[in-house]
Length: 156
Image (cartoon, rainbow, N blue to C red):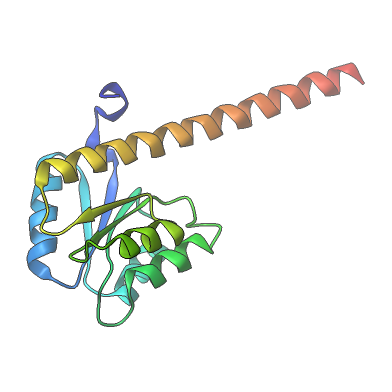
């Protein structure tokens, strides 16, 4: 797994939280690990940032003033160009119903606040590894389909 993530700087992570101290804490942690980090403090700002350049992973707070994290994630999952972006929810709400809803709208993990930095790092690394492996699998499938089409064309 470590070999797949040797060059963390290739990964772009968007942190979406309306509490600037949370953004600063997470950003400092992830930048020190070599990740490229972008920040958004509102749902609207996050959607514009994603539209401009889709990140490899989103850390998304649930409770924000203009738009909640569930709405943002639902919007992303409904769009074919953003539906594959992994979303890890962040929340001070640690109730089972909150966690269940996060997964129902398309989240792939959930990190309760206050953050445990080691937990954040391992969850980010794990999800980026899965994301990268999924991309590699899709590329292999595409190459296999092209080869199959060439073989079929030769047989005709």
